[in-house]
Length: 189
Length: 438
Image (cartoon, rainbow over all chains, first blue to last red; front, side):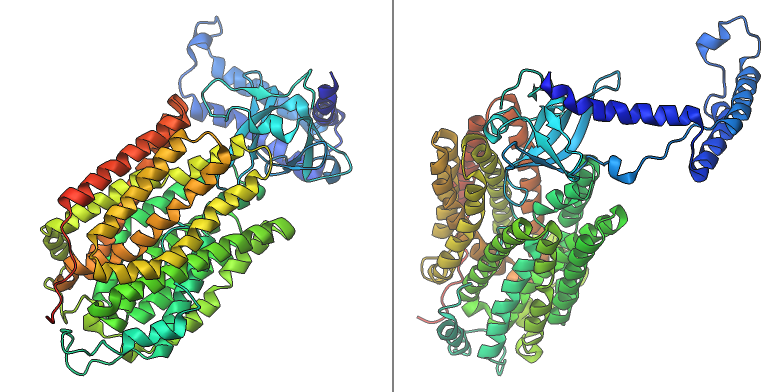
């Protein structure tokens, strides 16, 4: 399960955000934005769903909409006292789109061009655009997320637990077709 | 890969060949108006370098744009949108672009404006890769390219006249292909050693020498009547009426059909072959993909002056047939070759077809539509056929290689090439004008 090393980074930062939200440590700007959002929610809900949803109308509650608005109002009041937001050092977080993928030996493996998640929102694979010259002849390969290792000291690149040869012979990723994700637990470079 | 195709000429023979067109052009046989100026060697040399530097700049808008935008954290959806919109503008703009060059009396300024627009688009793309800027720059470049392509042919024709145009087009093709070959190599080096952005800046800065060369072509030597195919005024002032009159020229329609078939077979071939190289070569795949892009350009550079001369001696049709034979053989080799290294060798045939077409496309159009005064409009019309063929090719080849395999896709493309070969050898008439003397 060596490949799982990459996951804690992701999971930990998500938890960090959540705990921060609860603890109420927040940048005032983010805080204000969240409050505004929360305050707007009832109106937005009404505007987007002018008629009650079928499953709601089936309930005993005679007037679901005002109730929803009321609940949201209560929430807003709560959030004014304890506002969910987190500040994370910019160097701790990183955008993954477009960063370089490197093999264990430091070979250039291409760039991450997309991230795919499953229906539960779990990150499953990164799409790496591999090979070619000046954009001609490259192949998009789905690499199991667990094969990716983010080096805390080196931003802008990710190490892939696979060799160039393993990557180049993998089937090309095509949206809406069965996805072959290479790597994952048990992969040996 | 039409970005890498497309062009024009050799440096070593330069002074000798420039002297040649100038000397015989006022020969009694030519139908040019009496006293029309003879192009000076300096104007012809300026045209050489204009074509060379413009090809550099245009290479910047090749497939590398999508790599650059990916590195700028663009999503694939946005990249696809920008490329598609650019391609549509490039297709739809062909005919209006030709009409603009037809209507213009000062081809040089039209070309200068278009080149400046292309250069600025490339700078904007490199320096500020945000959606609005990239979107606008891609549209501007696509539109300007629709003008600059016909404008180069018109300037060449305006300088040297019908009698010398085939040799001139051969030189143009050689210079342009050396330009795009060097630009691709230079961009690769810059992207590897410095940054993606520096690769764009390198080629974008070639706009300046391109404009500088263009301004050294003396306007008074570009005879407007010649540039419009030898007549002072077009038959129809209204471009639409002009276009409808072109549709009645049967050889032009057959030729447009041949070109659509050519691109249907050709456009997806290099990308698919390069993808196969990436798949099958364990080492040096990148180098071999680079070779298969740059090497055909060098072949074009060597062959196209020869094509230009032979087009006058043998006629156009044998060369058109040769072009399709090379394409069909390349498709079949790609379909049946197993050794990935031989793919690179087969790709050299791309240079043969490229050299033939770079000369023949403007030449045949001048032959069949020059006399109508709608030479540039006709170029735009054939350009549309090329664009339609190319865009269908990529989609169709992608579909076939997904559903079946790449060998089937290559075999299908070879089939289109054989259809084109049949059209060129059976339906296409010889268009070389009868020699005036003898």
